[in-house]
Image 1 (cartoon, rainbow, N blue to C red):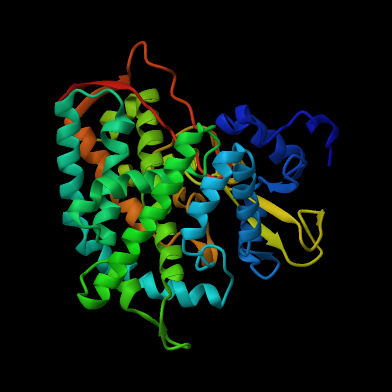
Image 2: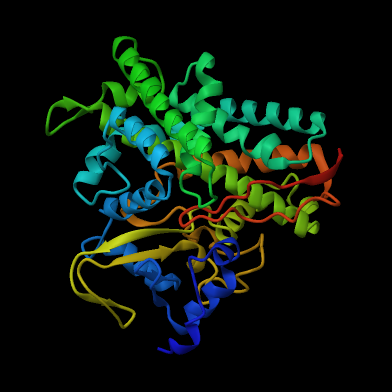
Length: 424
């Protein structure tokens, strides 16, 4: 394995995070498991090796809270001293969040996941289709009527936030606050430097969001509704015969907040950018449900909204011939695996006739396959047709900034996308 030619690869440098694909290609070919010294992580980029690690949950554990906590500590330590005191005071007020689904292994993982899995059966998703379509159609009408050029601001951000708010059961009077706080929660995974007042504002939003959700949990125990908060408020862990603690319920809700809107928002943005860059697709896709579904998988594959997640190595082992020791952290880069030409011919190109496009890893795989993936696909498969019905000749707006990702270790977000179009 030749590593001398890779000394210049800074996989977690800001410029690389904004546009990682050349670095990913080099690593897949020359060092498919690569030691990123700057974070002491072993980065896995090849599709077959990512899949191998995902399947072997005994060797590659999802108990990586330590990694996430270290990241939060770095952010805190970068704050000015007077701000640290204020942030620490807010932190003391907050309910401690225990590991639940994302950062647990079997069998603990299943006892939490099984509580909410009832929301994601085929029949439940079908039941929500008319409601989701109504939200999307109304948003598409408003966006086209407004003449707004920023697609992210006008459609991609508000639609998933409205839908996840509906699913959770957020009251209408709390929606404006909820959407602000949920956006701030996801933004915490990015690397954009923040002024002190914004760091403080986001910390306070996090505390106030906890208070809102706890109030709703308590209200649902008295008066159950048909929503996710009710399920978490009223369900019991069978083996222990008890309700979830507030911390456990908040942990699960926090995961749905990020997964339920941030990833869908990103794919709406990147998918729209693909339509701008490949205008011939617009007429091909319009009115063709089957091709829309493949297009959605391709958008997820080409710009995976979750670029990667860590795993903790539990024993001395090797992956693809690369030695790993117990206690090492690996980083599975779904964004790199999804562009592996060994799995996907012409991986950098969108192919709406691609066979097995659904093999992409944007939602992970195995026991930790994203439980909300069917809901995200539902929104995307309804959203793009609604937009194409109302718009044609979609293109990048002249003179607007070139769209580019906001740097993040985990997510791949497109903060702005200014487009122009003709109304149909």
